[in-house]
Image (cartoon, rainbow, N blue to C red):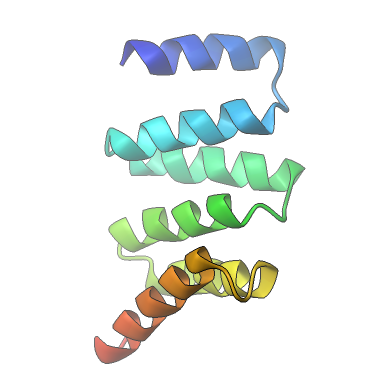
Length: 103
């Protein structure tokens, strides 16, 4: 999509802008370009490692690729960063779901 190209251009001038990276990663994720989403979330987290939302969506991206160990690790990181939040509760539910699937 067109929006993706625009954000990529903005990032050329500001490559460490975590908000732009987050936006771009989410657009990739929404367009089912999971490899690019993973790569972009990892870039954002390399700059600002304590963003629980990015860990959560990185985990969801791994989940979509059946990379369950990686997904679980990222969901656990969400819980570690924000233990009593709604997003941590969602992460725990996903981990519990994996357990019921024997993953």
